[in-house]
Image (cartoon, rainbow, N blue to C red; front, top):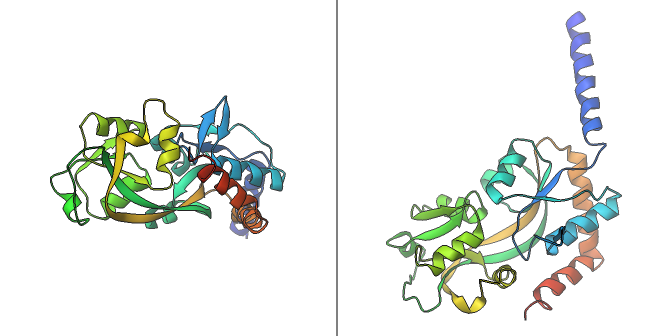
Length: 251
């Protein structure tokens, strides 16, 4: 009987403690990955940042600062429970076991890009596993998926910007990137430009981008965010944001 009472009290305490933790604002993090997310004038910008802030406004959540980290650190912090939310994150089978997800917020087709004028090419995905070097960012979706597909010729970097600099300097042959995202990504860096790179080979895979939540975040919180996202998809706000970033920002 005493054991039952102790277990009941412990269960109540754990439930109550969870409610206390999430009475305050969520600890939200991101990385500099334009056009999805980037920091400008001290604020989080980018189309997924805009979606996140609209959701927070709809749910009446406090607009605390979104903290930016290099991707590998942001990913580890979420996995270790040091933060609550990380965006943008592409969904994979492995990540689905680690986190909870709201989305999708975007889909893109992923290709390899090479330095403009390079004669290094390939016809099939299997060809790209041989005699070439591929730059990827540690623990990002390209890194994980290419490993799952059997690639071992990967040169791992701490950031995607560094991946493209490796490509320019001839240290690697290819860099993977979404065909819709690449223009907005390169545009945010004065020392990178569309004219420096070109798409090569067939599509590698399609990636769905989500807002990821740590496993300790209660399901009801995740469900509220999903409901808010579904609402802005239904009322036209979501499409307005997408059109703004991928049509008006082409030039």
